[in-house]
Image 1 (cartoon, helix red, strand yellow):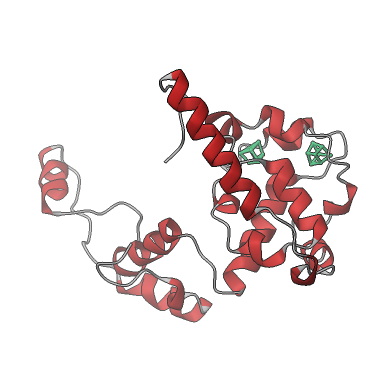
Image 2 (image 1 turned 180 degrees about the vertical axis):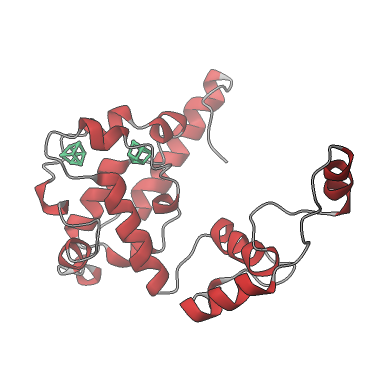
Length: 194
Ligand code: SF4
Ligand code: SF4
C-alpha cells in the first residue's frame, strides 16, 4: 500500500524516519554480495541496452508519478543499485514491479537511458531467476484458468444476455496450454494463494 503522506504531522515525521531507516538498511551495500557483472547482464537483455549511459541526475525520480505517491519507489535508486551490482536485492525487490510504464522518465531523461524499458529487462531477469511479484503470479493463474484477467461469472453472463450479447466461457483450457508451452506455468499463484 502506498503512503499517501496525509497523516498527522508528528506521526508522519516519525513514520517517515522509520521508513527511511528501513530503506537505508535494505539498501546497505555489502561489497562481498555485489555482482559487478549485473549491469552487463541488464545491458545485454532487450530493453536494458542504455543502462550505462545513466549519470544519476535524478530527473527520472523527479517526474515519476509512482515516486510522487511513495518515496519508497525511487527509479534513480534502482538504477544506482543495478550499476553497483546489487543483483539479489534488485531482483527480489517489490520496487521493480511498481513501474507503471508511463514513459515520463523516458521522455525526460537527458541520456536516453530508457528506464521504463530497463524495468522490463530487470523484471524479465527476475522471472528467469524465479522472482515474481504475487500480483503477477495471480494474474497468470487467472489467464491459466479463464484466458482473461477479469473473472467472468454467471452474473456477468446474465447481464450480457439482457443487452443482447453472447455469453462468455467461464473457463479457457487453451490459455493454460499456451502458458505451459511458454514454460511459465510454474510461476502461477497456487490455488487459494496470493
Ligand atoms: S533521468 Fe536518466 S540519466 Fe538521470 S538518473 Fe534517471 S535514468 Fe539516469
Ligand atoms: S516509466 Fe516507470 S519509472 Fe518511469 S516515470 Fe513512469 S512509473 Fe516512473
